[in-house]
Length: 329
Ligand SMILES: [Zn+2]
Image (tube, rainbow, N blue to C red; front, side, top):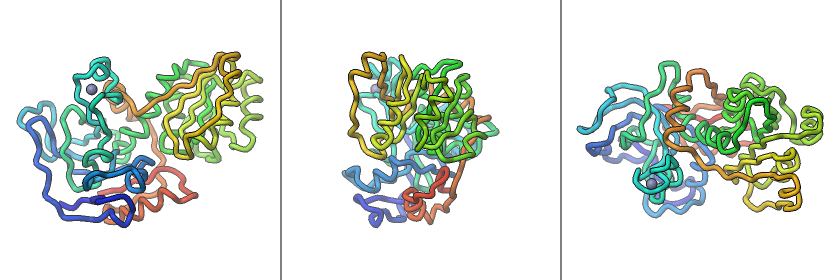
């Protein structure tokens, strides 16, 4: 089969290679990959996360069941599926408490093991979930990382009905799902972004970065935001922190623009703020996300053919990026 193999960091070391089709274990299924959604994690793997041996990247993917291991029940050949993108042992204290994303022996597929940028992928059946009829492969390649990360973040922030949430980077991969999940939870949603299409995704207000603080003040009648989602890190941390109201929670899960920030401790305690970290999501959460994905939307900016994967990675760095980048097979 054909696969994109990264031998060491650098896009020039990502090569379309003919390799042996993976053989599945008794508790695995073979997936014919149909779509891969690119995320910052994939660019980081190509660019700088050390690869100890050659690896097939592509953490977020969907496809069809092509082969089923002897001990696997509940799947049929040709079914549309998506993949929980983390390996987990199922036996450590974090797995046993339903927090597989914190597994002591866990890792992200496409970072520490082969993933979706190949014709076929062998995956443990416990990681594989059937897509609803209405969800296509693009959605299937947007749920494991983009949607799940936002879903967990809003649960971690305990976003409640009627609260104001401000989503920074709302037009990004995770942001567009944070908007939709926030709306489903009954919150009043402020998208901090320049993308007008976010209103179609459920944003009640779309405000630009430049005057976000003033706008949030007006919208909330000076109470400011109950929850802020900051998916991009350093660059807009100060803005996010400054638009939190009393008792506000800021939830973070990305450092695309850097990881070093200032925290005004006097504001933290005197206004009883909470800073919350979040990473990926748990298996039970992924199951909920997939089951309820029929009415979710994904904004796709560009689709690339499998053979043009390198161009897709280059497009990830385009300043005009306006939605997801999907590689199709
Ligand atoms: Zn574990």
